[in-house]
Amino acid sequence: MLDLKSKLPSAGTTIFTVMSRMAAEHGAINLSQGFPDFDGPQALRDRLTWHLNNGHNQYAPLAGVPDLRQQIAAKIHALYGRAVNPDTEVTITPGATEAIFCAVTAVVHPGDEVIVFDPCYDTYEPSVSLNGGITRHITTRYPDFRIDWDEVAAAINDRTRMIMLNSPQNPCGKVWGEEDIAGLRRVIAGRKIWLLADEVYEHMVFDGQSHLSLLRYEDLAARTFAVYSFGKTFHATGWRIGYCVAPAAMTAEFLRIHQFINFSTNTPMQYALADFLKDEPGFHNTLAAFFQRKRDLFGSLLQGSRFGMQPSSGTYFQLADYSAISDEADTAFAARLTREHGVAVIPVSVFYAAPPEQHIVRFCFAKGDDTLRNAAERIRGI
Ligand SMILES: Cc1ncc(COP(=O)(O)O)c(C=O)c1O
Image (cartoon, rainbow, N blue to C red):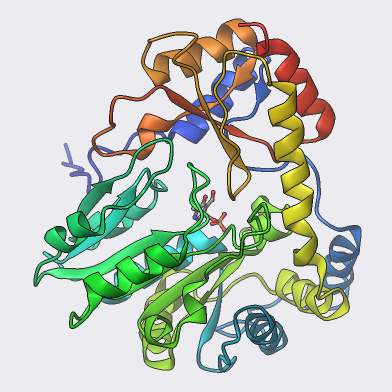
């Protein structure tokens, strides 16, 4: 018998798959996994069909279609004031997920340490582990998820190779402020530490706040792999397309990895996105208001219920404190909500290495208004 020794022995089926499956089994409204139940712009889909039918079906260049890289550079300049070279500093990837893996693989060697802020996205630690690295988790807590920068400073040592940051942050909806940027600067001063800025929710920042992309800051951008997702921005998570922006030397190393994982990213979508970004460069500016209205609708529908809901500052997720309803563990509560009340959610403990004592679940509000109304109707009274 061959001995298949797993490199990820503790990784099971992700909670997103588990909850989506449970939602389907019980006919529940699925507010668990993070994807919209509506499509992106018709004009973008029309451009895709056009390119599919007009000969753009072969391998794209390793770093991506030049036209799309140019559009991305223009967008970054307009949004974050940084001039990035589309030829040497932008890579189109099959989603942010692959970009995260390539960035980590580019810099993390066996025994290196990587700092993440829990609750954090579930691909971070496996990306580190598969490269022989060790993940150091800094725990932040409901309701404000404040980072204790002294704790971060104490966790840093000579083996610390990377810090992974996510703003706006999934699952908690935290949006970084200048105090976080100052804290980050302080702890990396004089250290050779790379940064991975996961900014896939860059356009979903609410209540008039700004997204503090690390690309805004010269000193931080110089050591940052910043990753983005067209899937999030264009309501098309199934398209599997995103990009990474990093200084030329870092991009060169990133490309060395990317070429042996995916080689390049699907061609017709790149052409379609390039056209759409050129034709409608303001589309992403509509997203904050679009999702804020959904957040507020869902919040108002659950007002007066026993769910405690402090409005999310960013992403398309809303946390709810159910401690007034039950003291069961969040995984049990999420399963019961799905089975008995017909609404699937994500228990927040799964985003922690060492979950603190809290009773929080995550709703995804990237859903049609009627879906949100029906879901709220089902759980308002419990
Ligand atoms: C924080 C975060 N990073 C990265 C991703 C992955 O993005 P993509 O679908 O483009 O791979 C997600 C998707 O949910 C996410 O929430």
